[in-house]
Picture (spheres, protein in one colour):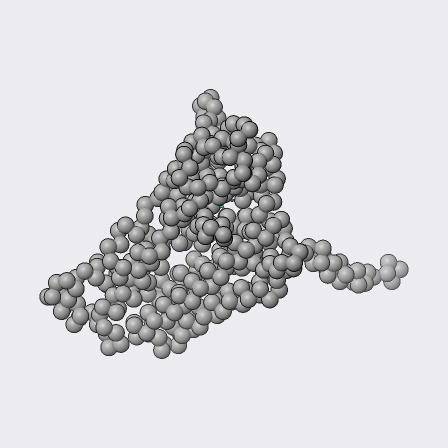
Length: 352
Ligand SMILES: Cc1cc2nc3c(=O)[nH]c(=O)nc-3n(C[C@H](O)[C@H](O)[C@H](O)COP(=O)(O)OP(=O)(O)OC[C@H]3O[C@@H](n4cnc5c(N)ncnc54)[C@H](O)[C@@H]3O)c2cc1C
């Protein structure tokens, strides 16, 4: 990937809502889970669906694998491989692109530029040559490949750095919006801004902690600290909704007071009315429009709604994310502290 500067999306989750293999009304289910259906000297043939290949519409290749463990009885699903996106039989079923409706960057500044799209990967009898297969027929290893190598750690350290950067945008926007609303000097508003700034610094501390407390793993390499990295994932998953809600609360109805599109400036009469009546003492009308459109793309647009789901689920549901912290925790050390304390606790002598 590095040598050829490839952009690779990845699909490592079985299809949502249709994972059950129950039999419907006596009929055997047409199982849509991606699996190997044939194997030969030249490679394997795979069929089925996998979700949710974010960015696949822009990618060179797609990585197929499993972030959740696979039962050894279903080892055919453990297939882990990478394919060019134009491999015969591969298709991507994309959700509605939000960028398509953003006619002007100023109307939806984030949707316009940053909609990476999400797609379901569908493979219909796709031939995968052996040199593109990383793993086959090994249920347990299909998950261990991520956690017994630094793969999951590097990937999610990057996610945490991304979240920290996003926090800087949110906090800066909250402050600018309060200035535009003329409420930024009110003590109660300053407290909210102070709290948001503290949360931003918390993620910064967590990211720096991953680096400071790096692990010499594997041999002669340095990898961000796994426990702190997983703790940060959990923190971000728990706090994103609350942080966006604070921004929404500070916004009030201001974003909805803005007209539908910046294209009104093409009409001199409308432009004149807008510039005279929508401006405030601290900000010209057009700057206010741009500001509140940006706020809306973080709290209310379809792009914003997608991000609410993304931050909740991109690394797996909360059970998966917390399981990583459970697995990596030094339970023996924690238990030793408790046990050491209990050992020192004196029991009253029965003769007393
Ligand atoms: C915007 C977005 C982008 C994504 N991008 C990618 C990507 O690029 N590549 C990729 O592979 N995946 C991607 N994902 C998919 C992600 O991996 C999955 O969403 C995630 O694994 C959770 O699976 P799910 O959505 O089926 O939800 P589920 O696991 O079905 O969870 C839904 C709800 O049910 C609850 N639940 C599930 N099981 C239990 C249980 N046993 N007990 C109690 N509660 C339970 C969960 O806590 C959750 O509240 C993306 C998801 C989103 C939303």
